[in-house]
Length: 115
Length: 113
Image 1 (cartoon, rainbow over the protein chains, first blue to last red):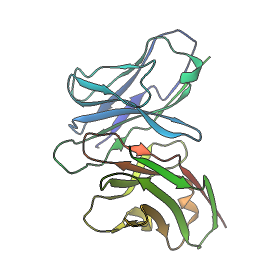
Image 2: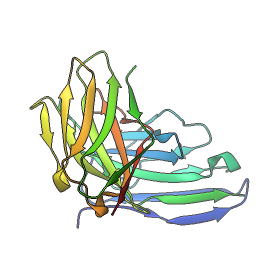
Image 3: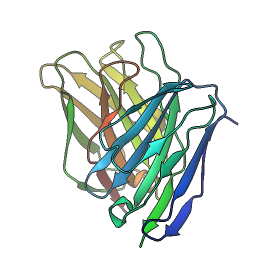
């Protein structure tokens, strides 16, 4: 089954304790992206990657890191989480290339609480 | 820069009534436009997308949307609401492949019996 998986689905942590949220897709997609969803703000892009070893900042990158060492994986790293990073996080992936835009497939989400 | 405005953060309809969710975009070039749906505790699912092939776009679950360039709108409609349509709906815009989806703030649809 074609899908985007995220782990963990729920996480409660404390300020300053490094954490990683994993994202994996099995569709051989070039493009992967992380979004955060906050009430009343919709989804905002954190980072994206157009292929292996190619990453770039989205609209709200502060406090986050990413890496893309393999095509299928795109982990989101919070080196020193703070309470304002409490949010619902989504990973997404799509084919990329040419002039046509391809549908982004979303993972199920990771609900993060930073105390 | 492109942006998306969804009018109404909450829309309530009765079962069987018309559903109309409004989306206006701002873009200097013809955009790609999308509607996503998010059911409780789930990720986002694509309902439909406009990529300049046809102005009236039909999606899943009986939804459709019409691209109106003169009004910079891409409103989502469904002739008859079902209880199962209760969810949050997001309009999104992108200028081209390789750029971010810019999302509206979402509209929560409630359906009463």
